[in-house]
Length: 312
RNA sequence: GGCCGGGUAGCUCAGUCGGCAGAGCACACGCCUGAAAAGCGUGGGGUCGACGGAUCGACGCCGUCCCCGGCCA
Image (tube, rainbow, N blue to C red; front, side, top):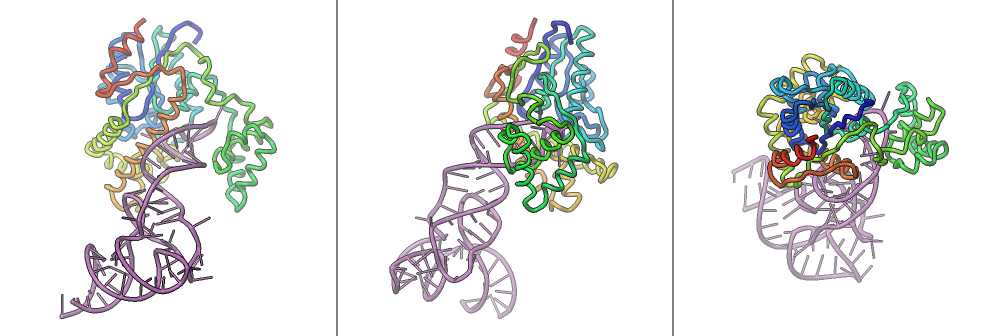
């Protein structure tokens, strides 16, 4: 990524119409290929619930970072960072532009910003987590963090066990403070390579309607059957990260008897999607580098403005 | 019709001996460096079914009525 190619990125909440817009953009320009920045579309066999682009769409436009791994594998921001950057380098080497499309905010920043992840040690983490899970252990862990890295402790809530454990893990395996690995994702400075960021903005009521319609459609075209096949094939080996996908998680719970009905599962999936969309809005909203394209109707309405903004 | 159980936040429900109305979820606002479709924080919300009574003081005790569920006729 040494040339001056300016790449593109389209972000926004789930069900905002990003994928269709990105497809239309790529079909309009002959030098654009898509790079998915979605933590769940990397999984093979998770198709319906992740709203993965169809075969036809993928035949029409080159898509990257989709269907990379088996549902039994763990995925993470680090793997996505590497895969997406490799895809971008490949696209650029062929003289084309990458269009990053995604709703996973941390992953988008991991790709475009200079985020360096300090490594991990699952064993160390498990040990720290086990201590933190003891009665009073969480407070003790937070005290330890406050002593070893006051700056990190100031940014982590005393109740946020997962982040406290992770910060301590980094300190233990690197010998350096967690906070020494970067200013954090709130930085939003210069990107690693030239990229223009655009966001899709829809009124909340419109988005809520689209989310409800999408969940209903997923059910109609066979999400339950897809999850049943997934469980039949892999059972308990479906990875920790794959099984938390919205829709899959709830339907798996039905199959395992923790949720009583499929109706209930879809009800929960709908609510979880709505809160997910809210967190996405919060994440992207703080990034001043994003140029927002809004409409109160069909997201396709913003296509002309996008093309205008991105034509070179 | 009789007996029993219930009526408290948008929903599901706690509420000890009568002493400032609570939780979870939802909703709103926000945080975020290896689970991120994850994890976490803050906040707004109440005619405690209605009316009457005893009490310094009632969601709680007494009475009447209304509504819901179950059982018996």
